[in-house]
Length: 256
Image (cartoon, rainbow, N blue to C red):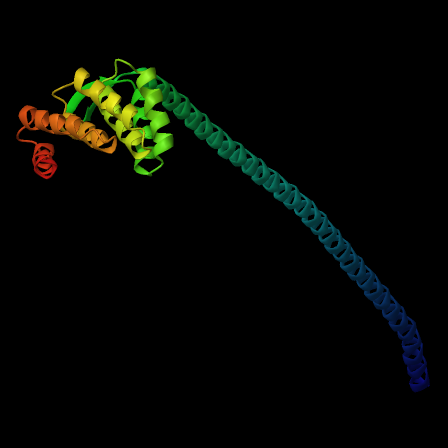
């Protein structure tokens, strides 16, 4: 009898153990679920935090990009301003240079005008004297015309010079070239008149011997041989050492 009762007690105990084991298993499943849920929540929170950080980084990057663009625009504006200022500086430099050039031209122009009225020292045919610039210019212009061989124009130029500057130091030389221009145009009487005017005005002039010889040539052209012989003789007596006197002696020998 004891054995069956023992078996019954063992079966009862086993029956009681089975529900407790099932209850423990259910308890362990709930804990696992909660752990999984908590783990999922943590992952989701970390993911959300990660997403939020990435969004923040993107926002910050975008803000930084805009800041860089603004800075680049400011740099370009500054470059433009610097270029404009350099352009202004260059223009100012050009303006100053132009003003300096104009000032120099004005000063030079004033000096030129003043020099037109300031006497200058000249040396013509061995004679030194002072002459105003206009006087010098007119004489040299007339002489240039003579040297070109335009004797009518040279005659007019020298005649105008002697009228315009009657007291000029150029006068004896002007009379000499005027006489030669007249001789070249066969105005022998007019030429003799001006050669004699030279001798009367400046008998010691370097051109005086040539003037006397030219008077004799005019007389020969006019067929006044007697007058020419007298003039040649006077030349030899007055200027015996001159080249004109040597030429006079040769002509006298031919005329006798």
